[in-house]
Length: 237
Image (cartoon, rainbow, N blue to C red; front, side, top):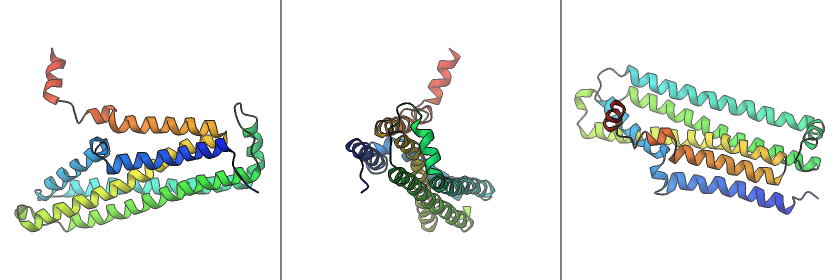
């Protein structure tokens, strides 16, 4: 009968809890509203405000196309990752021999190995669905930009309603894209489990620290707090 050891269960619990709690903090709490993802939603609203005031919207169409292309790349990568992961099932014995020879690795049974591989494939399947839906939402956004009211009507109630809807649509597309990327990051942490439970806990913690720093303490995040005038003045002194 297939069963994991207590360290395996604890490490897997830490992995799942880290993913869930981090996602909730980023998406549902006041702390998350100060993160880079949330701040970019304000930029999306500014984009829609600027777009509705432009007569020519070629730049907006190009930006939307770039967002679609980036999302399509990650969706395609997810499919490749799913295929690569499932191919590991055909070479389980050879790979297990290599893993067993590595330092700090923990012996495992073929059944447990295959279950771990299936778990990794599930993560990539989840990522694919998120990227595919994000791509579809960016496609809807491109259609909305094509149907935007003329610049002469930018101050009308219909135009303001359009800005609100387009901003929400763009933000939702970004939300699902971020969830897909988050799955990729945690998939890297999940790889530690193939070495053992301690490695899974450590790799999950490492991924968590990196993502947290990027959201709240990275140079990109600090750019939203910087005073360009004060910075320029300081550089000239």
